[in-house]
Length: 167
Image (cartoon, rainbow, N blue to C red; front, top):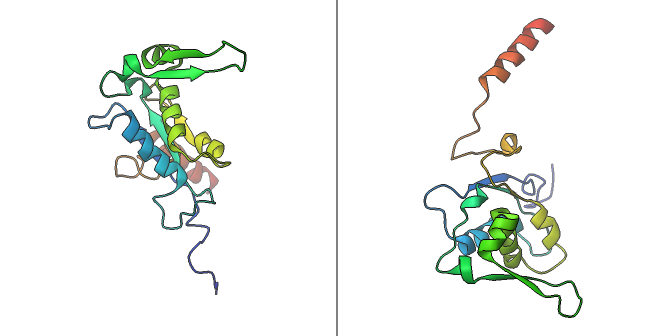
């Protein structure tokens, strides 16, 4: 019998969460980014510790529908510096959306919500952003819209055929 109480391997397993920005009722960019940051850090788990990386994966789809309140699309500026004198470049959110897409805006917002330490980069790597609905991570979701993922009937038939051939 194990004498370990609490922090087991199962508690540290990483789940996959899906966030669709096109669904009605999706919060604005800042509130959404803070919710995603909490999931990436693992603060929603009872074993959370600031020095360990126990967060989950987040897949954000339909990032072209990112929503910001007020006049942020025209007034919010993103800066880039090349360390050369006079090389400070700025883009507003609207032109950033045209040039890099909504996924880059969401990543930068989530990056600002994460703690500035050595765990920031691996946490951001677990955020997967996509401009459309399609993504390659559908098999990884444990729950999708509150239900388990629907099995593809064609795959199920292929598995049954393989089992009948083996016997």
